[in-house]
Length: 497
Image (cartoon, rainbow, N blue to C red; front, side):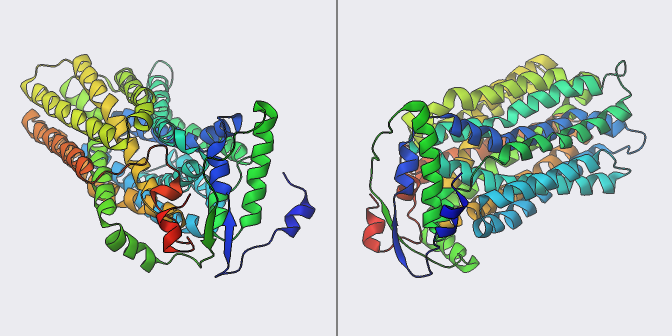
């Protein structure tokens, strides 16, 4: 890092003062480097933890239901999943607001610390209410991570790879899911450990892993783009220079910037009134698009995945300690979707690929729901069907986060991501697990079929909305996709480069 003497000389731009910065162009010209791997691993591991958390609850649902100390009903299992999502919604909004005000880096540590404490506390739950409370607090930590981490990753990854990397990072949720499924095979095997101890140990160990994240994040700098829009132009330039020096020492001379500097006028904090005006007036179509994509994928994912184990145990007679074997291929399919299809979102383009993945997932969901109702599928065939469906649904869901991050100005990026995550999860995610838990408790395949059909229709609605309202963002600087609020003039806003 720079010497302390240089740091003391850095000047913060006064409010209202106009300044020029080439930080975006310098970040976007960088060749892929180990610095970018640090960003991906240290920040993207959030999704791995979320996948671990969600899969543990999904895999452990039957064991928690059968736990002599908790003895939760199927409906209470669904309610506890909804509690996690409610916590995530509140955490996303609260921490998202602070992320735009305090910076990305400070919130990295606050949110992961909350996750750590709450996840460990879940392992010591003594009844439904304590379990639901600790799940809600765990969700709050993860929800806050979504806002801080998504915004930082998009702001520091070169534009030409932003879509590929963002989808891959969001897809690592399923690496955590696979890890959770494998862990469940151990902690739920009566021959290895008492299941009553096993499910508790799984939450405690999962929370303890967050210590590793804190160590990695020590080396992640504040987002230079956040710094420049908050008047810290000198500090932003210094951080980029340090990154450039490291990259150049490993790759040789850097290529010239592909576009020029931006002229900004230092503003005060973006108010809630500004956010509401931009979302409901200036960028109304993007708001409709973001809410639709987030809500539809959230309902589909949370409804199916949070109750996955209950379907297998109730309708296919799978023992609770064997559920992990069925979740593992499902998780791997979800992981491979963004990894294999992600580059197409940067080459073919966002609009075509988002429309395609949502539509294919919706059609296949309807077909598999009918097959389930007719009793045509075995447990493994049902798992294969869901694996294929979510191979397409996974990059679609990841693209929803990519879309809402790119759609709005830098000064409100974190709160925008948080609000859309909150809206989408509240509309589609909280209701989904509770509804499906209730449908499963009825024991009727026909009832569950209508739940599948609802999820399918919502995915098709999202596909149609993307085709109608989608916008081109592939390979473009963030400042071109949505001009910063602090751009000096309307003329600059029309042509940033």
